[in-house]
Amino acid sequence: MNDQAFTDTERAGVYRAIRERRDMRHFSGGSVEPELLARLLQAAHNAPSVGLMQPWRFVRITRQDIRAELHRLVEAERRLTAEALGQRSDEFMQLKVEGILDCAELLVAALPDGREKHLFGRRTLPEMDLASLACAIQNMWLAARAEGLGMGWVSLFDPDALAALLSMPEGARPVAILCLGPVREFYPRPMLEEEGWAQAQPLSELVFTDGWGH
Image (cartoon, rainbow, N blue to C red; front, top):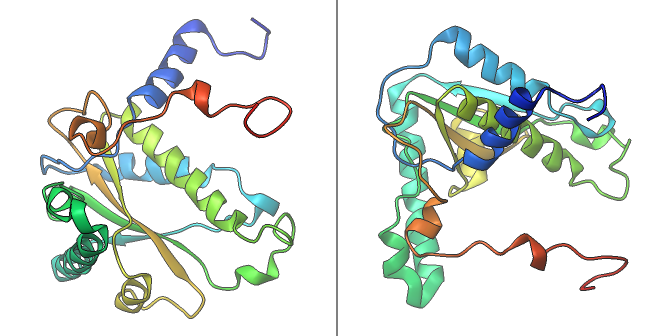
């Protein structure tokens, strides 16, 4: 172990958070203390970003009428997704895809307007702003797991409708509805595996050497 490494206990905690992070859909109400929420948001803000553009914006939803409208938008897209799935439509409709009405805290993660002025690292890969926001969300997810809170990323919504609901400026784009809060237990495996919807691929099939597929 080099002298820059964490201790054995510290490393074990980091790897445990990564291993046990789950995309949660079942919440048990309760609340998130303001100091804890601030820590989680700071963890998100500590994420890396291309060109240090920090393309993350978080909108905290506190009004019940807005929460209900978010749920309506997700439900509308859930039904459209089910139609698009054809033969798996009924199976999909049995899945719980969000915890919007049950979670303690609700956040919308979005990309800001004016992103086109940031060229550092984005001239040929403009989608790196989205990658940076995803890193911020993952930071929050891991920190939430370490704090014993569940978090779920909901992507079933019409982004234009959600942007309009939250009065986002032109060019801003919502990416995720984040459900956050206490849970009775964490899923032992990803929920979609538990429900038989999909199976994760082994790492050995996803790592190549010196060229694609080798």
